[in-house]
Length: 219
Image 1 (cartoon, rainbow, N blue to C red):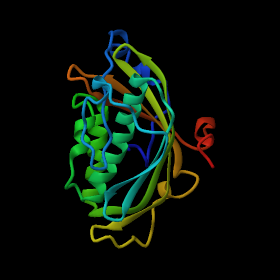
Image 2: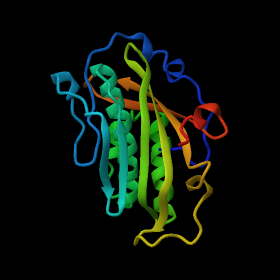
Image 3: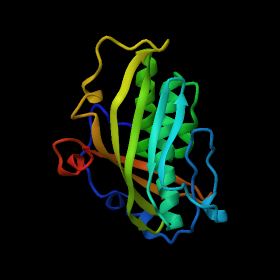
């Protein structure tokens, strides 16, 4: 979830992962959080998530609502699960005041995305802040899979999230990125398929309102 306060221009993720997108891949995957640990489920033929809305508890008082699409392709399903798993795990880190660091498992440690995610989480810890409420992730899709690289897109709605102190008391002043229209945006990620069979985030891009792609996320 890095970049909620300052986001880079949105570009096709595979254009930024040319080396990863040029190598043949295999059907393996990642299972999202919420009590489910990363696994190569897709490699064993395990079905992907059923279409519909799933509510995942990221931390006490903080939930993630994921609207799973109908995605019959196992490779694209694995990419979507990795994308949603990373989103959930980063909010879990925020909601547990850094106690849960599982988000690091879903990000390539040598990528720019890794430092962005660490910086984003550490920013909450430095300011002794946490979060409560409901973050929504929907309109998930995979527009591109090329070799060992893939792009995943999803709409994010943070209007139901409130920043709190580490005891859970809401802050008197909430940041602009948790208020409309900035709280609703398109997040896209470039992912790479590792030798261990896991899809991991390698880069993030965002489209904010009034970008046309961000407008499509407005309900």
